[in-house]
Length: 381
Picture (cartoon, rainbow, N blue to C red):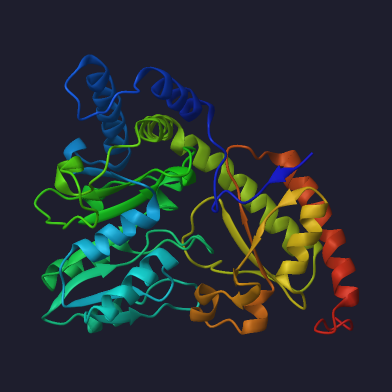
């Protein structure tokens, strides 16, 4: 038996999305650009999904561009808006930071907005970075590691005052909290299918009507000339079904998962010494807990929990076999040791109270065992 506490990395495909994907693969196999009956069946499936995603975000269907996922949506937003100066926050996902690095390579000036100790972007510091030639500001809505929610509406106002556009990576937020792109005032907003119960390989970018985005793929006039390539009809249908389920159940699920997250955090703090919750004082996505276990290497705890049947992740990034402290946690002021000792628990539809209690038991035992072996832990505490 395994219990999954890594929904921010990827969610299980929901039954609703799986049914829609299967039906589209079997019945809507035509090319959506073809005018025959099979092609039009595929077009109808895409259009229905576009309506579902638009409703989830408070947008118009024609403002939704389907992509291969959140990374492509972020890249399309940053690279597709022609700007001489771009501002991104220090806690962005690599999909945004990597695109920003590519912009720098192309000669675009990029500024990094700092965050406070809770991982919330300093709005006044952001305001101070705006220049006459600033064309785009990109700040994620809810952080993938800590869950910290950013004041997007305030930043949208700052962008408008400076004559810039605002993009927000909403990959985590769309599944965890109400999203109304019109109320937020964003110009561009990214989502990813596999974070909301749809499969990997599909996502979407909201592009406010009137905003010009230059496509980054060439070879066709698909998606109103903003994303060339035959649409992934089964994946798009699944995303539409997942979006419709969220539109109907998100508030209820948000409350249920928040209670589980609080149960987990309170249990850890009460039962395991020398622990604390990162971004505890910030508004957070209801499903995310990022906790420091002092004196431990997070990777060791991940392995111990995996062997016990629990899937979790660390606040660290692994590249070519080397573990690096999370840039998000470092930007918040944590030391490298604290960042590497941080664990992320992200809950979702598959979790319940019994699983949380089982995780607490496993955590308490694993932390005690690992700390006995850790020279970094003060055993006198």
